[in-house]
Image 1 (cartoon, helix red, strand yellow):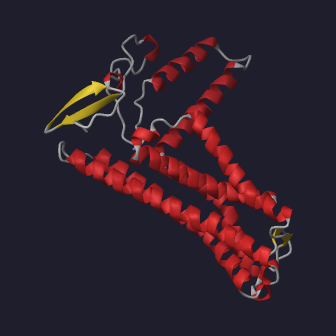
Image 2 (spheres, helix red, strand yellow; image 1 turned 135 degrees about the vertical axis):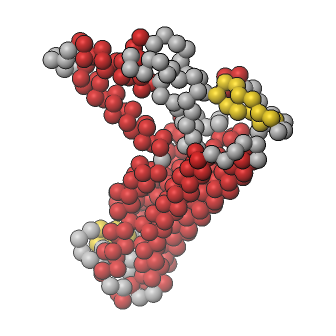
Image 3 (cartoon, rainbow, N blue to C red; image 1 turned 60 degrees about the horizontal axis):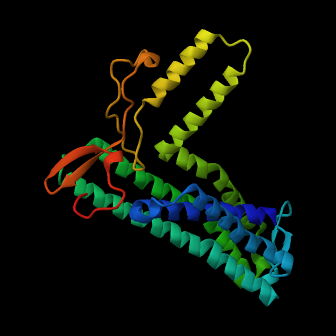
Length: 302
């Protein structure tokens, strides 16, 4: 039961993540309202959704049994051949835990790619093409393709074997087929984090920031740390804080960064960098800080 629960939670989390990305990129008016409380509710809903199908066999909707290769327990693939309830469980599992998530993920990343492509074409009509914009678009393409291929590679073998056992003769399915399907499904817990680590700059930056904070806390708690070295660590942290931030599309901003105090960040008293935006109105554009923008969306500028 735990194996089914964690596996379904993993693929449902990917589905929810693709929906949130699509909401924030394609429908920013609604996506900008997505908060941490919404994220917690969404995660709770993911686990409840997976629990319905994981607890089903315990309530006699389907059955759990040993896998045909004999070293693990999972869903009883032989039961659908002689029980209608077990067959309905397998069919619902295929529809709601494979076909539906697969469709949602593909549609979400398709809409994201179309939106990013349209935005890039609109920007290039006003400014000269820049490498950063191209890199951002290529980054989103790589991430979308990697997530879709990873999902298909992990769960398609299991879905195919499940349908073969449910609608065919389960005794004719070789144990090696079930073993390979399980290997592909469980390997997703390894390469899914790698996809985001390699293709998502924001993820790498957050990981670096968290590990840096952890090292600094451990170092501050050490009784052998030198106060002068501690000051150097704080200076490095201040310098890291002045590094430009990134938008969600991977483009970098460095407006307002101090260019004269890079070696001595602790002595810098200049105004900290602010996030800015270029407002395109007709054929001209101007640059303002994000704090000056109106909270309500306006239709007369891009």
